[in-house]
Length: 312
Image 1 (cartoon, rainbow, N blue to C red):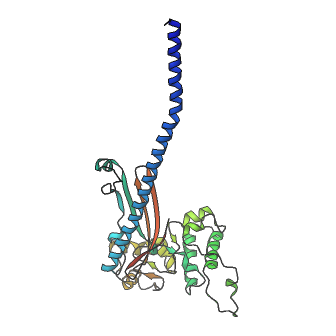
Image 2 (image 1 turned 120 degrees about the vertical axis):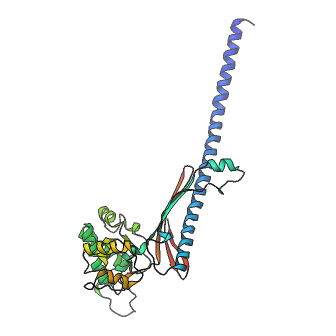
Image 3 (image 1 turned 45 degrees about the horizontal axis):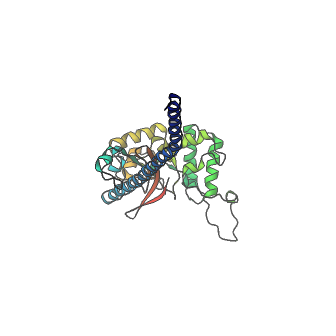
């Protein structure tokens, strides 16, 4: 074969190889992308299952705590955060060997917080007989945190419109109840960017407030100086800090212990303060490989049962 023909044959062969490569490359890429998508989806599904298991773990801890204790304090097992825990064992996928499972990162973290250690905005509802006391307390809290008075009024007015008492047909409603009702919110996050409330006010209050399904007292064993100061009208912030310092040394076994810490000159309404709780906030994360699921939930402990009120 002449040299020119051999050269042409080589060029043609190379051209065919290039064409075949160009034709096959998209198929290979599609197969790789599909495999990657399946892997990510499987990891996310597993992370979701691990996250749900974490909430169930919290429910068990709280249920067992109710069996052995009638008070809730920051020294109990439920109050200890769960540090990063690797739980690879037992999370094998179908047709997967143990070595592959051991190499996969499966990490769970979480913590339980006493929701009644915060200021419950539900107490500002018009259907609460002690609303006036809570309204005064909310004003104290907002003043302490530097919340804009207009935002404070908007929040209190919004909650009032969400939770109104039932008035029998034919009876005149008070002026405060004549405004049209609002659909009830279920968490503080529902207020963000709504009802005319500023972002600064929302962030200032976020660590200190909660919205629970019903009115509740504040747990003196788990609350902060800010919330305790707001809850008891005659209490100064310095006195609130002093009471919290005493509590951190020895928890309150009952309301009498708490009143003794206040001293004889300050009265504590038992409708506003308690030493136990029914509601707990759960925060945690579950990571499987690159998939990360963050979970927040509200649990209610009632009659030796722990119910999930909401989960996000």
